[in-house]
Image (cartoon, rainbow, N blue to C red; front, top):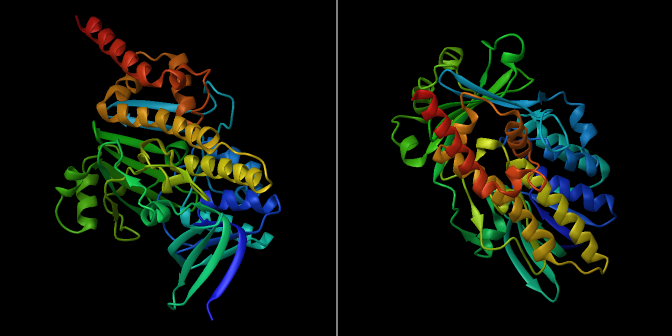
Amino acid sequence: MEKKEKVDVLIIGAGPSGSVAASYLFNEGFSVKVVEKNKFPRFVIGESLIPRCMDHFEAVGLLDCLKEKGFEIKTGARFLQGAKACEFDFSKKHTDGWSWTWQVPRADFDKTLTDELTNRGVDIDFEKEVTEVDFVDGSSITTILDKEGNTSKIEARFIIDSSGFGRVLPRLLDLDKPSEIPKHSSIFTHVKDVNRPEGWEGHRITFDIVSKETWLWVIPFSNGYTSIGYVGPTEYLASFKGTNTEKLQEMMKLSDHYYERFKDLPYEFEPRVVKNIAKSVKQLYGDGYVLTGNSAEFLDPVFSSGVAFATESAHLSAKLIAKELRGQSVDWETEYSEYILEGVRVFSTYVKEWYTGNLQKIFFADSENPVIKSQICAVLAGYVWDKTNPFVKNHHRLVKTVAHITDMEKENANS
């Protein structure tokens, strides 16, 4: 006989988004079930966090277990373009908030979260795949497939899809739509960083811009390994020949700053490729379900916004579900969709203007405006809902305007 469970909330995916949602709802006394397709620990990208997500981990009681692990502290980010450098310090940002976060091997980071939740009594089922969802009479019936081929059912009053790149409900409910972000892909691996320099140089996260649309990430971890990966136009990355190892080795030659450090180091695994990174959906919620994190929108890794949007949307959706389950009215359009998409729009502007080159002009301008830099720094830290920040409130115009002024200043200096 097929097994059937009944819970208040079913959460699909046990990454940071699912863990934050599960922790909040469990703390509030609701019955929660988390199903995760993979066995943890498992590899996933999204290794560079931004400060805004620290608010969410703290709010749901997950900060202390993470602090105990000694992950690499991230206090800002550096961007290189040839001989020019632009460094952002999160302690010097327009918006009040966290001035640091972490650079993390996600396999260890995510398992820390799920171990903590399991120890508290949260029900997490690994290696279980969602194959079907039916919504009937104010609840949902979800079909789960285990690795032995057995199926079971879960009845839930609400479903949170935190499945990330698995995008379970967008696939099952036909919610996918093309992203407006240009088509970029990434190729990446880890190395044992035996040539890591002493001091801050060996610990800082850096983005090395080798062309307007192509860049290398270097993310050092506290365990002695470093994540390296290229992002660029899909067609350009596909033009490199050979195995993924051979492709990435060839791409590393593009970096004057990092080629020597990494050229002879073996890759810990065959480099992986994610094609056409950016994703979008037709809607963020429906009757009895909500999409969070990368299940909803994924922009681009250039500003490390993935985990922050995952935890922001998870925390907010969990709070709204708790309200609804207690009989209070929730305006999902205003309180969830419009709010999340407002932040997505701000970050989307910065991603788009990065690839037009406008943002790079501001970053690498000959003269630095500390006020403008602090305002942009707050955006990069994830505080994209702060309307006191002109670079949030007027994001769609201001980046273009400042880039234009930068061009004019450069022309005047050269005339």
